[in-house]
Every structure is written in C-alpha cells, then in structure tokens.
Length: 268
Image (cartoon, rainbow, N blue to C red):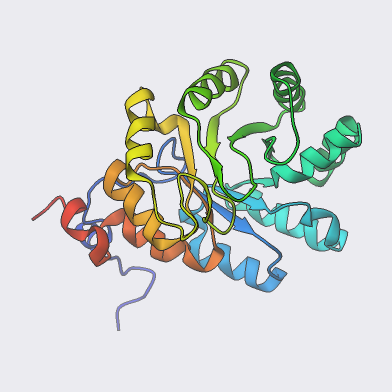
C-alpha cells in the first residue's frame, strides 16, 4: 500500500483557481477571531488549518480571562505555525481609557504577542493620538493592524473619512487597515442589519483605493465572503472568520466550492 507521506493531490485539484499563494502571503490574508475556544480545539485548529491562517485575534479583552499558561501556549502555537497573534482592538481601547498603554504593551510583549490592533471602535480618538499609538506599538517590535469604523449598531462607512484614515495609518506604519464588521457581520460598515453587503458602497471604496490589498474586510458570514471573493478574487483579505469556517473559506478562495467555482476556475 502506498505510504500516505508519499501521496499528494494533483496541484490542479488542490487549487483550481491557480492563484492561491502559500505562506507567507502579502495578499489573500485570513484573520481568525478566537472568542475563547479551549486549548485542545485551538491546537486541532492549527493542525488542520494552520497553513490557511495568517492572523489570529484573541477577541475583545479575552486575553486577561485565560489562565496564564493557556494564553502563553496559544501564543506559542501561533508562532510555531507562522501566524501573527494579537489581542482585540477593544482591549487597547481599555488601556487608552485607563492611561495604561505602556503597561498594556509591555505585558502583551512579555506574553509573546506578535501583533496589535489599533482601533477606536468604541472610544473617541484624535488623529494625533492614533498616530502616536501606531508608533509606540511599532517601537515595541509589534506588527500594527489598524481598524476603521465604529462598533455601534447602525454605524455607516464614510468613504472620504476612510480614505484619509488609510493614507494616514499607512504613512505612520500600519500594515493594513481593517474595515469594521464586528464578529456578527450585521448592522455596521458595509453590512445592513441582516448582514447583506452594500454592493454600491463596496464598489465606491474600491474605486477610491488604488491597491485593495491595503484593506482587510471583516466578513464573518459566508455570504459576505462569497461577495468579496467574487469581487476581489482569492487575494481578498478577510477577517473575523470563525475558527470552524477556515477550511470552508479556503475552499471558496480556491474555487473548490460551488459559490466561486465558475468564476475562479482557471482551467475551464
């Protein structure tokens, strides 16, 4: 019997699109939100899907709720699988409100986090303060991802403000800018209260952004992932993906699922 170690799927079956890049990727990033899964499930996730995950966010302020040894092990596993790991942006907002940014940064670096999300989804933040936060995070050796948009239900995306934010954030050292969609994907940003995409708004943003790879779209729902992949292709950066949906999203990216097969299949 043929050894399983020697068996390989044909490349055209693995990626009918012919366009999916391997890690480390600059485009087509997948960011997973971990809202508190156990260590065994987390380890299993990385064993089965680690090659398809680029960033893991330990959502909100959940890092302080883990036993220290569990948090440290999750971070260690991410680093072993070449995955950037960061706390949720709301946790940094808590530190800002309490004037404890230095303490916050020192602690997450000691735990081994490799990235940080700078956001003002709940609090108000002046542009200068945002610039300084990006710089302070980078000075600690952290990869910085910034986020645009408010978390309040019904919050709308302002294209002009988004363009200004992208330009300023990138010029101060952000790797890319995330479009707020929350973990629900409903009632904020480009999504209506049912989670449907505002296609006109997406089109307006894409017309104004010279390089779509500068953006990461939070898209926790399958319908949103399909819409963005069909518009942008496999190189769409997508975030707030539930852990259980990583493989199904990767199948969408490669044209291994009916929703994207016709559009992405490069071989006819």
